[in-house]
Amino acid sequence: MSDPQPSPRSVIAPALDLARIPSHIAIIMDGNGRWAAARGLPRAAGHRTGLDAVRRTIEGCREYGVRVLTLYAFSTENWRRPAGEVEALMRLLGEALIDEFDDLMEAGVQFRMSGELHSLEPALREQVEQVIALTRDNKTLVLNVAYNYGGRAEIIDAVRRLGRDLASGRLTPQTIDEAALGRYLYTAGLPDPDLLIRTGGEQRISNFLLWQIAYTELYFCDVYWPDFDRSHLLAAIADYQQRRRRFGGVEDA
Ligand code: FPP
Image (cartoon, rainbow, N blue to C red):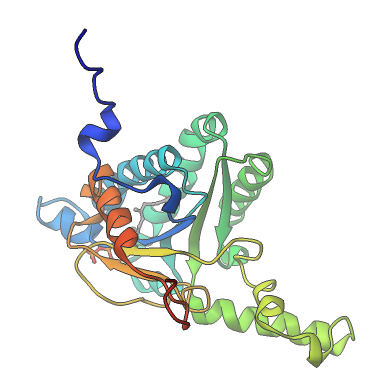
């Protein structure tokens, strides 16, 4: 009898240690505009094609047992972009929530949003709130979309609400520690990212998850986000698995 066929996973994937898959991957999806410009297309076409990369990444994360995927889809600074592009990005989120809803449910994906929901257009905000509520009990993967998100704004917002609880006596100064502050962040209840990927060749953080990435492993790659596929995701995880995480202490023997 011939040898059993290798599984598709072992043929195309780098050898990953399935016991050391990052629990939480965060991604700065950069390069949509350049991808579009290189093809003579409007920037919005880059964002739209970027949605295919989002789908591939969700699939890859589910397949390998990643528990949380945080995607930086719209920053508080992105409002400065031309009105047409901002509108296209808003429309894309609304459409994606409708088009992908059945697949998210079937795949057991819980949808969350990190960011300032209140300044979104009311219909979009309602749609986001509905999808959050309807997917709340899904357990396979948390898809946390950072939308209208800024890291400093998040910390200020947290401190403001914490201050209110101090003033009302619900909190005392002695009980404020890292975990306490963490409960006021948009990411309350989620583990900090183990791995942060930025596509598009730039090597900066751009006001993303400033509090949460204190000990996160950083991975930068040149590929433009619309071209990001399973092989890029697995290469990032493989690279992460080469790192020795010390969290400020000494390496395990
Ligand atoms: C950065 O590329 C990308 C964005 C600002 C938007 C990302 C949005 C998507 C991929 C689609 C929406 C996703 C969801 C989850 C609804 P850039 O425009 O700054 O590219 P550039 O640096 O080449 O100009």
